[in-house]
Amino acid sequence: MFEKRECILQANHLVRQFPAPKKKVLTACNDISLEVYRGKTLGIVGESGCGKSTLVRMLMQLEQPDRGEILFHGKNLAEMTAKEKWLNRQKMQMVFQDPLASFHPKRKVIDILTEPLENYKRLKKGEKEAKAKELLRMVELPEDLLWRYPHSMSGGQRQRIGIARALSLEPEILICDEATSALDVSVQKTVIELLVRLQKEKHISMVFICHDIALIQSFAHQIAVMYLGHVVELLPGEQVGSHGAHPYTQALLQALFSVRDDRRKEIEGLEGEVPSPCDLPKGCPFWSRCRYGTETCREEKPKLKEIAPGHLAACHRL
Image (cartoon, rainbow, N blue to C red):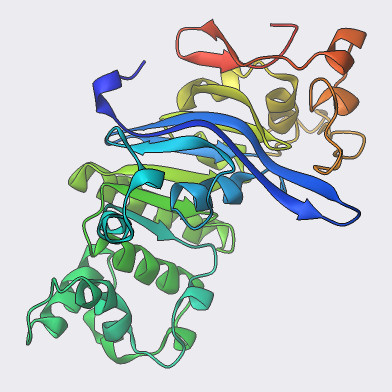
């Protein structure tokens, strides 16, 4: 579906585990392989605790994988020197779920926006105010916000400041970790429209973490569905609603509510509890909650395989 030569970030068989009480091991990410393409958006969707945030922390080198590798333009990030990693961080920037927590509470917007440029010596003396105003215009905010503190602004304004700060270094990849989950629905829409516009203008790639499969399918070019540390399905974004094949993907879609739906339609929820990541099932991680589960599913873990062009799923039924 995408040209291999346009792949700029590649995660190969990533595994991340953490020590847990009683000498157990919590597996947050289990054998994850994904690719990010130039100018495209990779959406990652799944329930809380499925390993989405741990994955993006590894991509940003905030966590080191226990196994596997991350290649940026074909170069293994783990093999870079400390200086190379620091320089490379300009090319991959992150927008956090809670912008207020990622801002210094005693710094004004002008300082927040220009701090990355100052850190990398990319801002000449006397250009600070002009550059900050340019960044505000880029995210459609008034210039008079320069002299305000983050706590005096709305959530939507703060998230736009976070986006402007992340894009100030002109990165190749923008990673958004639940960047809209704390916003009102109407504000979510405008922030997504802003990100889509900036992506087209700057030809940047995005990795977007989200709980809402309806939201992510509206703009992502490719979507990875995660469950209990595994990628269970990977498919083109526009095909999720019509071609989502894994039972977990289908369950997420069936749980959606719309005011346009037939009132007689019942919203179907998933039954059962998510297994503990400290005690992963022997077979399919979704087996205990799947309506189609068989003995084979319980005993043998399905591999992610291609079931259609550009569409992969990990299910014995497919």
